[in-house]
Length: 217
Image (cartoon, rainbow, N blue to C red; front, side, top):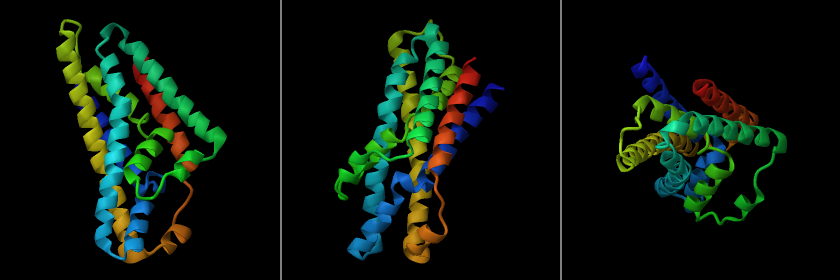
């Protein structure tokens, strides 16, 4: 059961990365825009690299504080409940407000890494990983007999692994879609073949938070 649970959680890390990558809100249209502006397809790759770096930094920026809290084994259940409530709250906020943070529009197009970092925080992309990550920490069974330093190293390494795998899946799916739009589909694809993911995004945050609460309880 533990192996099955761990496999499911790692799969959730990958699937959430694929989901983030396909969501235009995470930036792949900006990579297409960069390639069109410079009139060369090779410009896609530096833009995608900048987006992935910012997304990765945002994942670690959220996960690392929780990795430090995860060593408090006596309070692990409370931490997981709190994380679930935070993610649910973020989802409800996005459902109610229905608007993008205005400050994101003021970031120059060449600062893709900064934009990617801030959008992943503002839209709760990094928060979505927290319940999954804490579930993996529970499966790892970091018992109270471990020294704090070794426990911190283990949870930090796990946070790094989650962030790397998630970002790789995110930029893989987003990069593939950006390449396809630039190479074959064209920008008309976004107008004719895409749909609004804002509500889906908010509901998925709430769903992940509820799942985190259910596993904690």
